Amino acid sequence: MRYSGFRVIKEALTGHKGWGPAWRDPEPQPAYDYVIIGGGGHGLATAYYLAKHYGKARIAVLEKGWIGGGNVGRNTTIIRSNYLLDGNEPFYEMSLQMWERLEQELNYNAMVSQRGILNLIHSDAQRDAFVRRGNAMILNGAGAEMLSVAQIRKRYPFLNFDDARFPIKGGLAQHRGGTVRHDAVAWGYARAADSYGVDIIQNCEVTGFRIENGTCKGVETSRGFIAARKVASCVAGSSSRLMSKAGMRLPIESTVLQAFVTEGLKPVLPGVITFGAGHFYASQSDKGGLVFGGDPDKYNSYAQRGNLPVIEDVIESGMALIPALGRARLLRIWGGIMDMSMDGSPIIDRTHIDGLYFNGGWCYGGFKATPASGLCYAHLLATDTPHDTAKAYRFDRFRRGYMIDEKGMGAQPNLH
Ligand SMILES: Cc1cc2nc3c(=O)[nH]c(=O)nc-3n(C[C@H](O)[C@H](O)[C@H](O)COP(=O)(O)OP(=O)(O)OC[C@H]3O[C@@H](n4cnc5c(N)ncnc54)[C@H](O)[C@@H]3O)c2cc1C
Image 1 (cartoon, helix red, strand yellow):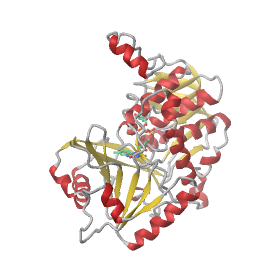
Image 2: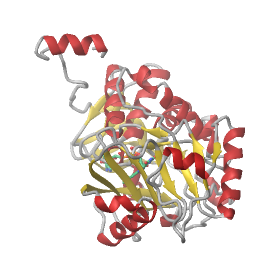
Image 3: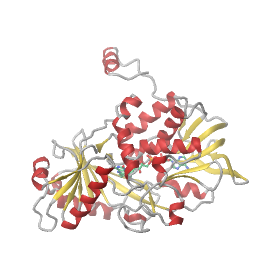
Image 4: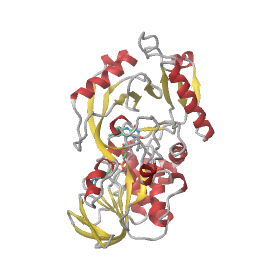
């Protein structure tokens, strides 16, 4: 069924009896050409691009819970391509361009809103770093503008500009950045992939791999063995756990990142802002809630919930930047498991086991990468060669010493 304004009006006038399920609920088949593990944004996008661009194949997405129940439905919805380094910037810019036409392509309203993102500057050294980053963005066609305090004051009057400790001295803006309704991305890709015949199988946990003579023959699941020509791991925060079942130890650690939403308020934040003197970022949802986050919890965990010290830490940063935040009531807090890589950048690559592929290490920036990650992973799966735009994202960069470390933090996953 094609969605349109006309359809919405017609259904409204006829009692909404014409809507069908957006995707099927099939039983798993004994064998597929491709099995993608993980029904998050990346897994579903991979299935969609694989089915769309690489010919007829039997494809399944296996999800242990429900699609959208992982990080794709837990993030703070920010999209942007304001990166500095060569390996990253072209990839995230490609992703941003894909977001710009995604709703038309999927025929699904994902509420892509290019309301702009602004990184605030609080010191002269930070200004130098952001000018450099802005230049890298401009060279890659991503667009960037340095804003003065007066320009920022006009757009964001509620910020604490003259805080003696963290005065705001300007900002780096990417006007094409913004937000996208996160779970709608999972649903949009699921519906589009299903329309190409992809089987989306929920409540199906992969519990192991069947590997014979160095080749992956399929996966053991909570619903029995499923054979596959190619198996693609795409499970974000569960990556190290899952791949250990294939005997692999990844350059990834898992930590929890929390997100926060206040009660609905009148419009106060027209775009996305990030605090440069602490780790805090915020936007305002279309319902009016302030959506914000900060540092991940400081210990490794596979629990999908966070702990109190980081809540205090994030709120402190928020209050330093937006003192009025203290008057708002928090509605909800939740956590997601982040696949933090050693250099803060992702991996899309084959493994040393034939027929077994890996996508992960997205840290807390993988939502914005969803379209490009899906496209590049599908390319790798179908052709066995890395996509040109993602060729830096290979395992061997850790062996060769070619890190893509945006923050220059070194091998300290929880700090990326
Ligand atoms: C609080 C928070 C805020 C964030 N904010 C942003 C942001 O503003 N912008 C941004 O770009 N990124 C953000 N991120 C990061 C982003 O959400 C993730 O990097 C991205 O969603 C990860 O890819 P995914 O969607 O495929 O992951 P997920 O949605 O987590 O998908 C992985 C799926 O694999 C399934 N799975 C796991 N193990 C198995 C198994 N054994 N068998 C079958 N299925 C399995 C899980 O159930 C899950 O559904 C944030 C993350 C969090 C938690």
